[in-house]
Image (cartoon, rainbow, N blue to C red; front, side, top):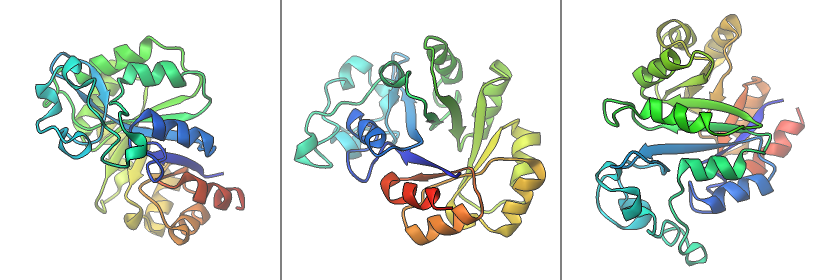
Length: 242
């Protein structure tokens, strides 16, 4: 069955990449949670999508220019709704500690690798090694050199190549050039040609970001491995019906 993964948590119902959105994803019986990480000035891995704090906290500046202590008290929920006032930017370690016993897929997207955040790959693997995690870990990124470096540091960690554009033989590229275990295409680029190639290479497709039922039905009929969505509850019943 196609797995349904909550994008930045159940981000249609709670502010993205906060504990409120992650807890909502579990309440909705999501098969997994997708989240994004950046690194602070003092080397802490934090769960947030953008490179800057502007959109979700109202504070201007790049995350890498702040210490975690400086951002730990910022309000990351009011931008979404007053109901979520004082939701904080989580540490990745805090997330892993809270959800380590859940039998779910945890998809960690690294927004930028070591050329932007020096040694972020080592820091991530170090964090993961500190926890006994019941579910499955998958690391994805649009930064493909970052994924290749992750694999060079730990050949057993599973990685997924993110792409927004149509590519020539993306599954072959993901395996041969990046050493990845999965391909994560934008849903508009998924067609029979890609499905056939994924079958040829036995490459799982984890498709993002699918919020309409008609698009989900097409992808589930294609038997993609998973669908990443802001509305996990709307797609879970569809997946169960196939």
